[in-house]
Image: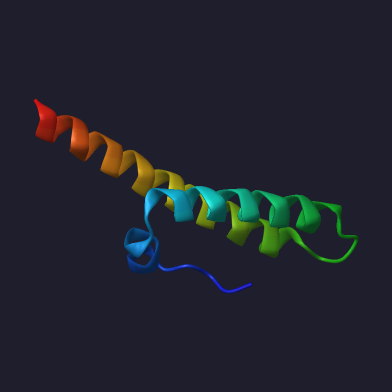
Length: 68
């Protein structure tokens, strides 16, 4: 699993980001269930999910400001 860069996430449309979040959540569950050292992997997955959610919120807020 490669880390996603912010500029790559920003290039995605809303639907792609939603699918990516679902995929990352599934990966997070698998990482937590794995008996091997998965702490750092789970941490990276949570960071990616947070990046995607942050960008979604920024776009949502910027659209609300434009409409006012």
